[in-house]
Length: 236
Image (tube, rainbow, N blue to C red; front, top):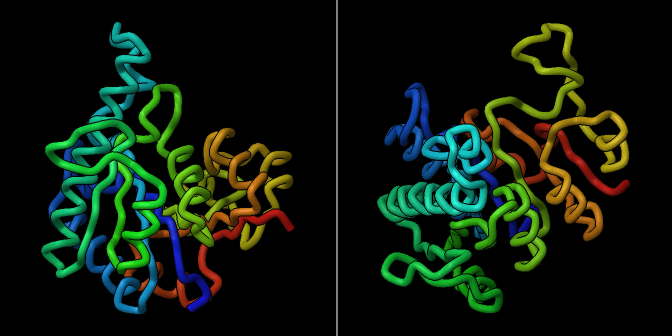
């Protein structure tokens, strides 16, 4: 394996499948099976998942909800997704632990760095919910921060496209995919990969990011084994 310990970042929207909102059980099980392939290789896996399929704090202000309140509502949405993913993983015979950025003691553990690392060492998949527990931070920032804290070797950002493009490939048929990028190049080209806080955290800590298509079967496994899939962003 190329990577022994990874952090997988999934979007909440991906869980909708073909639905307009909510969670598609088929998509949830598909992701669980893809993760199991990697787990069976002996990879230590941590996961951060968004909540956009349920609620977005950033959009709350347009509906008259205070931004801070909206962000906390969004964090609770990520916990719902995390619990759903945890259930799907366990149904596929994997051991998991769900850790939250703030206390929700009836359903998960609070995030404690050393405990999270110990769970990984014992072969458990660790899911981080509720962001970092504070408003104004995205789940991208959570993924970067938690990856650094647990000493992951890479952040794997699973999306519905197969990497980073010169333009939106769904709108521009002439868009071309980058195979590799430096953090500086991504800044200069103003590419929307992660929010600035998340991106800067990865750059300052020399933590590579790979953007790839999570919906294509086998991609996650191939990445862990070292195949060049998606777009790699590094401090080169």
